[in-house]
Length: 374
Image (tube, rainbow, N blue to C red):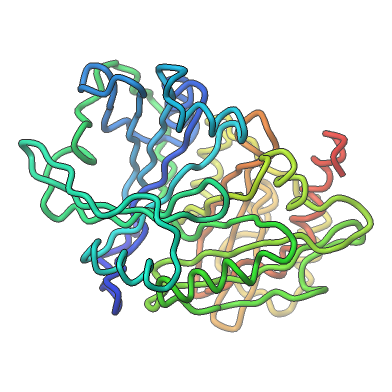
């Protein structure tokens, strides 16, 4: 299995994605789903037994993928309760590992970042971590973290799980985060792209303009920003006028605000990954068989994978000058049609599957129609 190596930091000390944290209605039940459906291992736990009285969290991993699932134990836990009341289950924060938390935080604030938490040291007998956070979108946090001086599970306040809810589930071969996608309101995309550029020295990598992404019913605009060494890549979507409601408008309406729409997870063998996840009960968007008839007829497609196998598993393929990529998207994983996952295998391609946008949008609109939200 191809596991990503240690990344060199850039001029601001950005290394790579660290973890993502979801706020959910029942942490134990959702952690069970992540362990069973995605094959993650429950490595850590935080709750009353570890000294945390107001919330409960599970820390799950597979290779470089780190996910925290948090739920509220008390109505007075306003931060969690208010988030859930407004947004439902969703991604509250995502973190990047950095060399020096204070250095990048000070730079970000000087360039206009909105402060969520100033740099702080959190320690126990196993050492310490340093972290800080800035605001992103409406209620999302971007966390800067350094854990070089901590040698225990995740961070202070976490210990080994006290409940034995480990599951026998197939290893899906998930490697880590490829990119994180945000949905914003009309005319907010440029503002947030500039926010990344100013606060963290990102650059605009790709700019999808009018006509690039859409169907006869709906459309969107998108910009992809990335860090100096491309270890962090974040597309930002905003709705664009169409005959009917776009997926971005549906997200903002159902989420009651802007936030993270989906996380793309890297794999070195997407056929194995999707086969395993389907066996584990994960639901994916439908791809019509006509897509693969078109794929077989394309002269520019040169891939080592068997198209018949891609068709069987409904995996999408897109070609670029530098190679190709394979990808597939889940249906929304919660009760609201908001957050979902993407699984992606890159073979030299650095894009985001522009050639698949038509098929992807049609699949999303099929589900929107069933919900009565198109």
